[in-house]
Length: 131
Image (cartoon, rainbow, N blue to C red):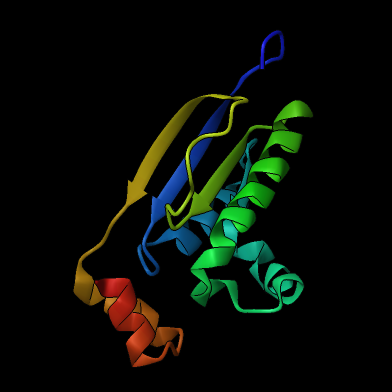
């Protein structure tokens, strides 16, 4: 994108149950100057639009990621610095993104398992998340 500004993207990635939701809640509670966004916040309506549950439809992930990239780009163009919380299934960085800073959240499998059980996830989905 010659002649156009390029931006820095802040990404916090982690498997389901790794602590992303807790980190989001804490950032929102302290009143951070960043715009905090969780990839799951649009997933229900995006699934309705796609006509299938995006969680279990890998063919929809590139379009869902592109939707998020458009949203992140719009925020950056408006002078907002987002922190994007995701499972890490993003494709390559978009052309407007000069730098990506990643923070990977991780936790022991027993804690991750307990957190996912607390969400009433089916055993098969928990096993997939732990794999």
